Amino acid sequence: MLDDRSKTILTYLVKECNEGSYRVIDTSELINALPKKYKTDDSSVSLCMDYLEKGNYISIKYKDAKLYCVTPLPFARQILENESNEREKTKKMYKMGSLLYILVFACAFLGSFLAIIIYGLIF
Image 1 (cartoon, one colour):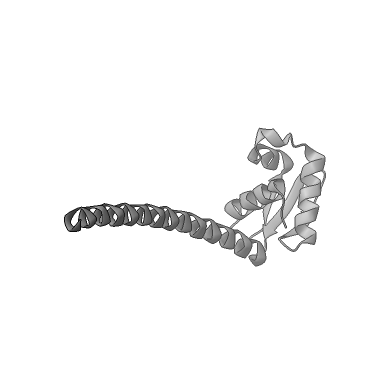
Image 2: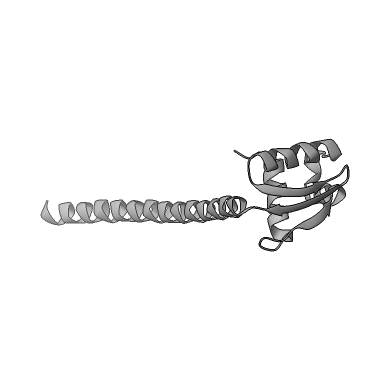
């Protein structure tokens, strides 16, 4: 399971690197890609990159104190695509649930309204 920092770094790497190509990335680029609320420094970027490499999300060809030669692996691309598909499905389900809720409310209201009218006509 990826934490927010690692997921943000992985998203940045997938966006920046073409399919199967390595790219040299400076740690300052990764720090700038992360939101300020994480208060990221070089050591936390290093930890995230090591975690992503050990989890087979990325392949690191060269690593220095400030530079990484890195490419995302197909597994990482698949994980990010699955997450976006899950988010779309969740949004769709919320919309369908809301529509169903409104429909049930309208049908219940009409049913009770018609029952009162019929009762008034009969009695």
